[in-house]
Length: 201
Ligand SMILES: [Zn+2]
Ligand SMILES: [Zn+2]
Image (tube, rainbow, N blue to C red; front, side, top):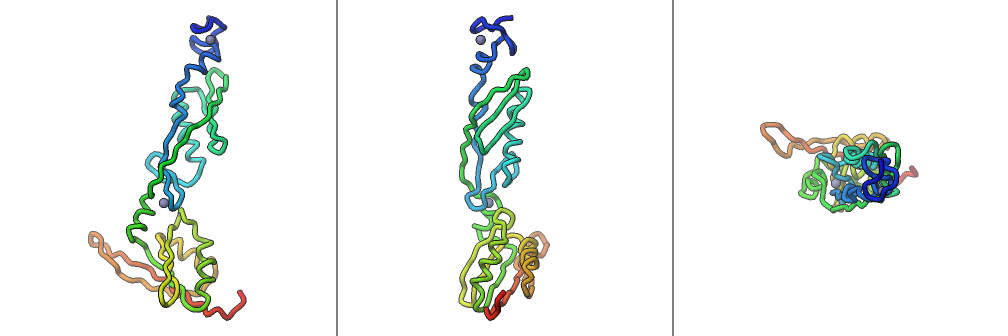
């Protein structure tokens, strides 16, 4: 069998390896993803995810339809596809389009599950300590200075409480009914933390 394009020995279908590589559609290596400018998550299929592995798997699954195997390295911007045990390397072209993910857009629209109220002279210090523990992609938040101190509005009550407990901070909890959605009561959690600043922690 000889390559129908150049007459060399055919190795893949009716092509030699060079002509096979030439006729691979370069569009297979071009992708556009939506990325959230606030938390950095990327929309992969139907989900928003923050890990590169999911992105690599997604592209590999797309490529495997056309080849025997595919490996993708996002950091190197490279894909290696395999046919008949021969590897072919292609640069990936990935474009990102900035758009708020559903959680961040709810936050931008004013939605929050609760807030941490920092009061006292140590409020600024506490703000740094607490927000350094918040993962913006898991628990997006916004910070507001108020007359009494600082309020941190957060998306996830669970994550906020975990952080405060993990830090061993003293706090007071209160719940306020803020709306009813289809007969279900929705509460907002307030975590009050007072720090008068006179300690050396
Ligand atoms: Zn050829
Ligand atoms: Zn987001």
